[in-house]
Image (tube, rainbow, N blue to C red; front, top):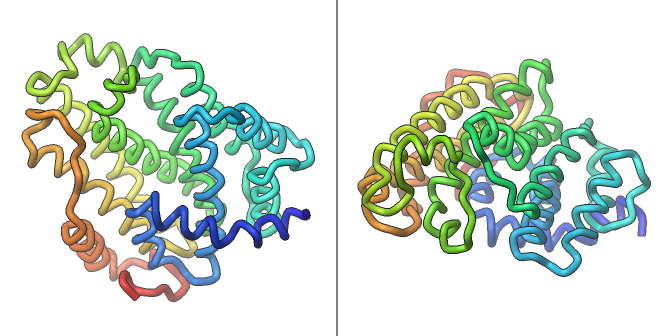
Length: 286
């Protein structure tokens, strides 16, 4: 099967996976221009497949990740995920090096390597999420790709740091720690009721990255409203952690849907005067 045929055959599964698993990003994707939306679903599907293969320890995880790694190094695509990326690359300037960096993040998770410093954490967040921001920029277009790259990475890093803070207890149960060792040592504990100061520090770092990322959305040639909405909705997880007492109790912070929608609508009002998208898009809920 050709790359184009593989992409077409995977489209329904890609849409359903995005809708079922990436609820916040699916909601924001409703603001994407129609002509680019399916390609975003396909990209999400590939990256999510690699992430699930590693996180859930699929028996063929090495094959799934390895097929994409080989394509990123210049080999002909042989796996479904690599074929989909090849198809996307026929329409968009995807950087294979960035795809390889994402795979390096997957290998980090397989190795259970320790994140020692905040710089190490920034690098990890670049690999597993900042890369996604860069690849999304390739799909959405940017008049100055180099100027758009830094903010795209920052926004991805902000979202990954948000994931880490949301999932502290779940990760601890699974024997995983994604907070830098130096930070845990400085603040003393990750345990519920003992981590308020640590969370304040980490939330401030994430908020700074959100600010940097959002400030660069204007570089995008399309889809800016969708990216702004995704950032606003995802950032609400940080506010929910604060509302719930900064880790006073164990558990995952969950933002109610009305609050997500309110955040997405609110950010549209604040950016209406800016030219963040050059193409028409459907409103949320359409």
